Amino acid sequence: MKRQNVRTLSLVVCTFTYLLIGAAVFDALESDTERKRCEFLTEMKENLLKKYNISHEDYKMIEIVIIENKPHKAGPQWKFAGAFYFATVVLAMIGYGHSTPVTIGGKAFCMAYAMATEMNLMLATGMLSSVIITTGAAVFSRYEGWSYFDSFYYCFVTLTTIGFGDYVALQNDQALINKPGYVALSLVFILFGLAVVAASINLLVLRFMTMNAEDVRREDNELQSASHHVLTLDGEVLSVNGKLLAGHVLLDCNDQADQVSVCSCTCLGPARCHNHLLQLEPVYQPSGGSIRSKRASL
Image (cartoon, rainbow, N blue to C red; front, side, top):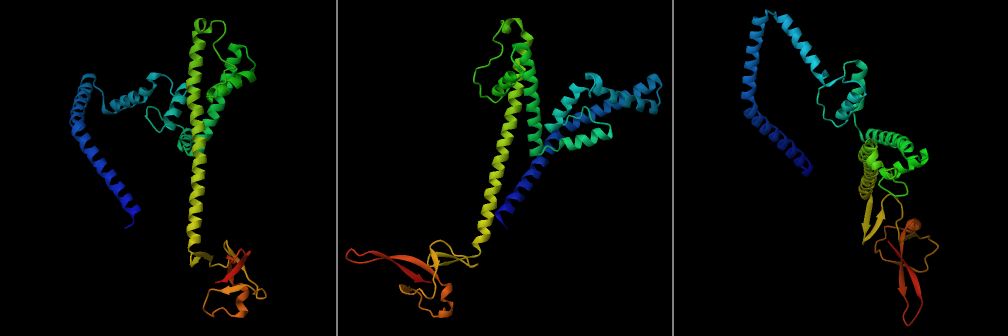
């Protein structure tokens, strides 16, 4: 069995064993308490039915009303604040379940929105970063008296952690003392904006690293596939598909002046000598002679 298959099988067995252990522990810790609570609630239900003379149908209706009204204790769940909280819970894959979409459009959009692929995350964080910077630029332009472009420049330099220092907020009119709301807003903007912009940059870098890894893997696969079509003779690599590799030249039959054959076989006749692979080898002349090339026929 391959090593990779062994690792996969081991991971499956370990995961399943871990699930069995967790189930046994939770069963021992929670099952007895659950049974007692169920008995207590059943007894309370019977007492309420007898005390107020309520039918079982009316009691079920009361249960539905109470259960449906429970999420609304914190206020409207689908106004912008509640919807933003729900979107955060969905994107973080937490899924508390305190509120769920009811309409068909809401359910369809939730399914599409929850598919947080790498490209979708990059798009979402990029759009959110743009919204934060443009909104912050408007706020700082109003409170600092800067132009909108200068405020945008300040927000970009701040959230990308460049921080030249040529524009700094909260430095005029004793804003740190006289404008506590503006101070709090600036801090929230910096902290939240830094988190979002940093996440966007990290996702972008991760995408480029993934692309580089894919290119390297593709090149390795191509080299592995090409290695099956390579023949090695005396330490020299020759391509079986007819291509010449480095260090080899074609010899024409008419150019045989300095040929020195290193092959004792006669399998290659004169009619095929045009396709011989030749390797240029330096030959040193004695007594200070010049260096000439020797063509060795393979």
